[in-house]
Image 1 (cartoon, helix red, strand yellow):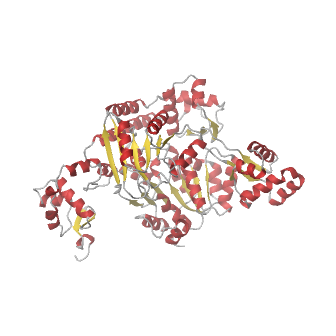
Image 2 (cartoon, rainbow, N blue to C red):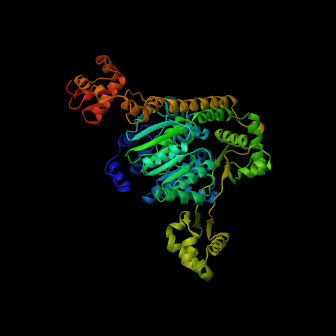
Amino acid sequence: MSPKEILKQYWNYDSFRPMQEEIILSVLDGKDTLALLPTGGGKSICFQTPALVLEGICIVVSPLIALMKDQVEQLKRRGIKSTAVFSGMSRREIDITLDNCIYGGFKFLYVSPERLKTALFRARARQMNINLLAVDEAHCISQWGYDFRPPYLEIADFKKELEIDKVVALTATATKEVKADIISRLEMRDAEVFQKSFARVNLSYSAFRLENKKQKLLAILKNVPGTSVVYVRTRKRTRDIADFLRRQQVSADFYHAGLSGRERSEKQDAWINNRIRVMVATNAFGMGIDKPDVRTVIHLDLPDSLEAYYQEAGRAGRDEKKAYAVALFHQQDTDELKERTKKGTVSPDQLKHIYQALANYYKLAIGSNAFSSFPFQYNQFIKTYNLPVVETYTALKRLEDEGLIQLNDGFFESSKLIFMLDKHETYKFQIANPKLDPLIKTLLRLYGGEIFNSYLKVKEREIADLLKTDEKQVRQWLQYLSDREVIDYEPSADCPTVTFLTERLDPEKLPIDNEQIEWRRRRAIEKVESVISYMQSKHCRTQIFQRYFDEETSLTCGICDNDLDKKKAMSSKEIPFDQVESVLDAPRSITDLRALLSKYTEDQIIAAIRILMEDGKVVESDGKFLLQGFTSLVGKGE
């Protein structure tokens, strides 16, 4: 099938969004492809469509378990066979999953970059017909990026070893240095780079410096109806602000990584289905959540980088209708952000000490337990070894940055099971164990024959209702079947984990690069300075983002707070519509127009251009403007 036929069959769309089709055709032509599309720009379709056109399976490298799970579930709902391998899965489940990817007609396999290093995965991947390697959140491969993940550096070796000839890298945010780093680190040959403008024509950015942020928050929510996300930095703040909003009769709830997975799932579902209007959350909320009608994203605390802010703010207005991204801050916020960033470093000795404490906590011998995951209760860990709260957390994050461990917040993982006996042997077991026959029949009726081939999610409550018993009894029966190897049953888990990504090392031999740690500290400070500069700037906010991401533009957005303030200060009499129109019989840049219309300021000229474009009288291409109807802008008639 063609890409458009795939799009229609699985997504029920008649046409692609701008740039999607060009990216897809580049991938299908076998060209190494880098795609930069803003949050909500439809990145997934750019690799999912060509993978469905081609024979074989697409391996998708993704950094977050929640993101993997979300995309796999979305694909399954569309009838596309997809799966994922991530830390916390049993070896048997991984084994069966990889077998299915070799023999079971699966189209997508999502994995973390850490998984690519393992001998087991590489051995099984060699048996797969890999049609495409898709690297999602590709900025993680770059030390210049805001979310560097060392294991991403292993992708090029994996690609080379398996001789994968089609590669696409995707991200929403990348500066010039990051783009170059992605191409270099992935060893892309003559890469085709597609970059959609970072300007969001429907998204109005604002930043307000004020003392009473709560009152401004209420005013925004009152003036702009619709769904909202309010971002704060700490878990305690999520609850406090949600309580404050509820006292003001605003429908609100809170969300953070410390909640149980079941709670998070329920809260997220209530917000997505509009039973809750406002979600107050840490940055744990939002990744992979596809809700197009968010009207406002409000930051009550400042983010650590412009990349993070752009991504979080970009969750507003994904339906392309008018939306607002608002940051509220005061001087103390900027001072605290600078101070926290400067302190966010630990010495190599501290890293070694915390690593040793982790190894002792789980009684791990040197050379053991590569890719082993363990339940991790942070408060219990620091209490056991009398460790400082903030410094220990920072050290754990640095150990994660160095690719030594991976921290996963608790997420609600449904119970899963698979039949280990084939259908004939299962029937024989039913005959020999009549008391368990109703349970086995119920499982087969609910989940079908696929339960003999793949681990499927099961709901003990649903099974119990059909058998007219309680959930506890069902769990006992399922465990009994599992103990006798009729099935493999994995009860639901809901606990944070820590995964050792390498074998347990001698702390004195940890591969820690002191210069790299210092360089990252300096980069973090630079990024914070960019955030503060953005918040305090009087320039067009969209233009600030565009220039930060190396997109040259002379045209302002016309809808951010700063541009609107300039418009208000300028009467319509001061906007030179006629004069601008008179010189646009040929392509003109803003610089050209300033020279031709020297009696007017740049703001006046841009205001005229913006309004003429909104009226459909002027078009733009490559930074130059021309009256609608003239052809020289597109190279005709010359």
